[in-house]
Length: 227
Ligand SMILES: NC(=O)c1ccc[n+]([C@@H]2O[C@H](COP(=O)([O-])OP(=O)(O)OC[C@H]3O[C@@H](n4cnc5c(N)ncnc54)[C@H](OP(=O)(O)O)[C@@H]3O)[C@@H](O)[C@H]2O)c1
Image (cartoon, protein in one colour):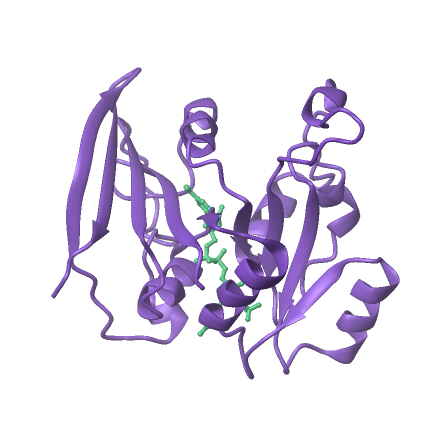
């Protein structure tokens, strides 16, 4: 069975997903409401975060408050990173994030053996699907079957978003439009089928809800339009 898949994206009014002061507190507060069992990152998203913050530190000041009392099931989500090319090396830092219960790498048959050994030596669980890249549908099915993931939130850029949309596995697209014109170049974007290798992909959506929040941020939630 496939889990419920939600793409959650913060953008500026001119469609930039980087280079503007996103309201991260609001982003994560809203993100928590789906109570996801897992969060999915694309490798580029992790590498961009690592470039911006080489230590990839999230202040673990009150780390204990995130941990369930001894003996109780851990309600924190699993952090899943799609990385068939084996480029993410900062797993140790990520594993220290107090918001996640554990980490999992998604690999494919083309993932270098050296990287699979690296994951094994670091005791990082890995799941192998697909040939060139990961097969997202199979990976989601396995996450549900083997890790009990019923809801997964995707915090990624337009490449992985497009792959998931192309595979027809997305239930909801959630967009937080900030009152800010960021300028710069239109890359990366929230939807980039060109980078994902699906040149002609277009996705009709149906508005579920719209809300104006806090400092004029527009929260739009869409489902896939039935054709
Ligand atoms: N504002 C926001 O809400 C927000 C949220 C998240 C990220 N971002 C920004 O988005 C940017 C990154 O976005 P991005 O689009 O460049 O990258 P991305 O979506 O984070 O990563 C690309 C992922 O797509 C996978 N992929 C590519 N083609 C595929 C295919 N045909 N089948 C299966 N998987 C495939 C890649 O896997 P492999 O290459 O490993 O095979 C990789 O894991 C960063 O700058 C980040 O800061 C913004």
